[in-house]
Image (cartoon, rainbow, N blue to C red; front, top):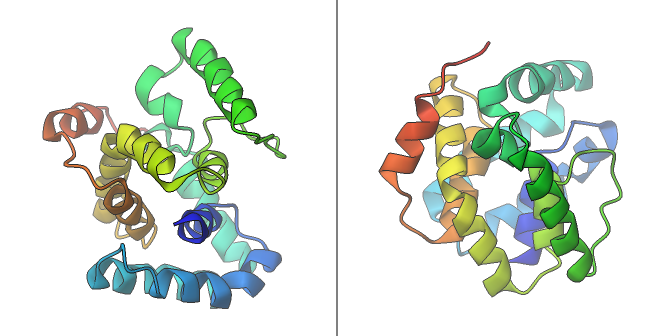
Length: 185
C-alpha cells in the first residue's frame, strides 16, 4: 500500500514539470492497485492524464484555485476540524511528534497537517497504522470529494481512493456537518 499512498500524495502535490515526468509511473502504480475498485482506478485516469499532458501553468493555476483559495477544499486537514481555533496548534504539535516517533521528518515548508505530507508519512508506516489514520480522516476525505465532484474536478477521484483505502463506513452525519460549512469561493 505504501507505493499507492505515495502516488496519491504526489497527485495532490503542487504540479511541477518533475511531477509531469513521473506521471506514467504514478499512473501504473494506481492502475495496478487491487485494493481500489476498478471504478476508482478508472476514475483516477483522467487526473493522471491531465497532469501528464496539460500545460504546467494551467495545471498550477487550477491547483491554486481549488486548494489554496478555498477553505472548504483545503489540503490542510485540521482546517476542516479545528478551523482557526487554538486547538489546531496543539494538534499540529502532536502530529509532528507522531511523525518524529515514526522516524519521519517532513522536508517541506508545508504545515504538518497538509494532506500530501501526511500521506508521505503514512507511506513509510505499517499498512495497518496507515489504514487507521486514513480511517480517522475518512469523513474529511468524503466531504472534500463531494465538493470536488460538484465542481466536476478530476481530483475527486483521489479522495474517493483515500476513503476506499481507509476501508471504513464513513459517518454520513460527520460528512453532512462538514458540508454544512458555507463555500468560501
